[in-house]
Image (cartoon, rainbow, N blue to C red; front, side, top):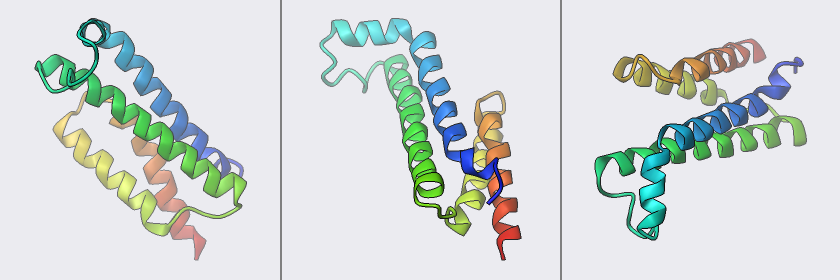
Length: 122
C-alpha cells in the first residue's frame, strides 16, 4: 500500500469539510431563516432552504465516508472494496454531466486514483 493511498480517506474527509464550510458560507441567509423558524420542518420549503440543507448534508455524508475510508485503510490496514473507486468515479462523471461547474472535479481524481489502484492490486 503506497503512501498516498493511506491518506485517501483523510482527503475525502477534507473535501466533505470544504463542502460543509462552503454550504454554511453560501447559504448563510437560508440557514438563518431556518434557525429563526425553529429548524423543525424548515428544509422542505422554500427551495433555497431545501438546497442549503442538501448541499451541506452532502458534505457531511462525504466526511463520514472519508472517515470510514480512513478507518478501513489506516486503522484496519485493509484496502477499500474493488468497486468503490469505480463507483466514485461513475458518480462524479454523472454529477459533472449534470452540473459541470461543481465540486465533483475535486472528487473525480480521487475516484480515478482508487480505480487505478484496484486494477494494480491483482
